[in-house]
Image 1 (cartoon, helix red, strand yellow):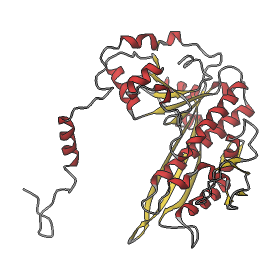
Image 2 (cartoon, one colour; image 1 turned 45 degrees about the vertical axis):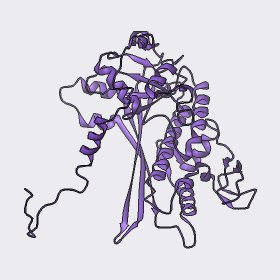
Image 3 (cartoon, rainbow, N blue to C red; image 1 turned 180 degrees about the vertical axis):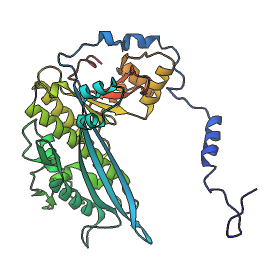
Image 4 (tube, rainbow, N blue to C red; image 1 turned 90 degrees about the horizontal axis):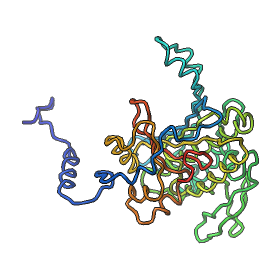
Length: 390
């Protein structure tokens, strides 16, 4: 029987409260294949699993970790007008001195001052109207986004230690080589009916060579193509956040490359929340990131820079957890995800095209020694020996 409310009526069940149970019941009666659900014979994986003892040790042990993470949120900001949506996105970076953290682990009582001194953080944030609001009268939502993103990239800076560069500076740097920004970036003209491609646009902007429309260098991200007059536009804001995370990574790795190439860069692990990939409209930055960091690796002693993306969800994570539950992968072991592994997990006959347009790092699965961690999933640079030959 339902509870009686203060108004004298009866409490009603949520209209969608049954949805989860109903969908699960339907799924239980359906017949479909889940690659990670039943591992089957796993002997074929043994040749692809490497114990810690077989992994080549770097001549410069890791002494620090630099982690980068971001988040975004959209909210309706006008009472009675739910279509007016404002967005906020941020990307944070934390530099952790591993030697100090290990010292504190051995202590009976942790020193909070030592922990605070071991961690230095930096943050870049941006906010903008994402739906139902515009920079000025008489323009559509795509033009409004183009103008806002251009303005934010020109004014928002990544400031930490000796790094003091705007997001636009870092975008130009990503299109160049370490230490040398590109003089211009290629832009596909967004004007309807124009279609002019690869217009060279410098940092200050330039007119389209086909139609004369004023172009911004940030138009190379093509974020405006994902923006809609209807809806909350949370997805393009998430794409924008991903770009900012990549630019923060570019700025911080370049800072260490310029200031301490043979020491601090070679002893720091860069961690990104999520895979080393770019999705959606800015996906062409995948190729730029791959080229940029390969150029950095070619001009750095040893195997640095060490870049890793940590995945927390998805088919790869499900498969990794199954391997751990069945002890196919022991603590301290690494599974090289070659074409055969990718084909099994992604259930594809063409593993060579898996992530071809999005990923700029290689997949691997590593089961941590510490029990408090779930088996982390990540991508690793070609420059490292861990994934060599994958």
